[in-house]
Image 1 (tube, helix red, strand yellow):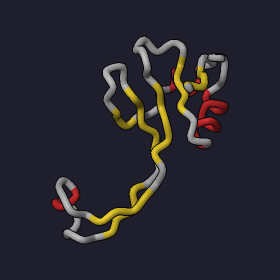
Image 2 (cartoon, rainbow, N blue to C red):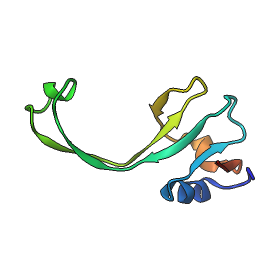
Image 3 (tube, rainbow, N blue to C red):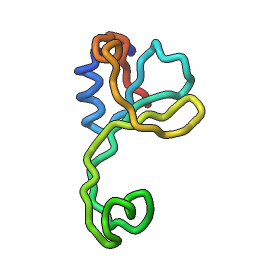
Image 4 (cartoon, rainbow, N blue to C red):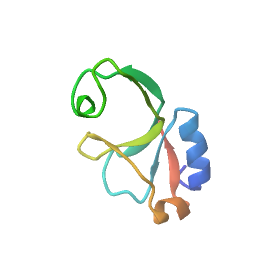
Length: 90
């Protein structure tokens, strides 16, 4: 069912579901929520910003699985936000 608004898709993401747009060209592309966490700095590039051993907060954000299987940070375009072709990906 790919007839959801972005608001409806965002609610699914918040429930740890994967969503995609029917208009996306790549096979197996979808977006998903990466929950927030904390971790200890122990390697670059953060070692160049914080002293080793510093605890930092990693904020929740949305990532995308690309058509070639890579994971990248994702940011909605105006077209994505206004689209009505979002759907749940099993």
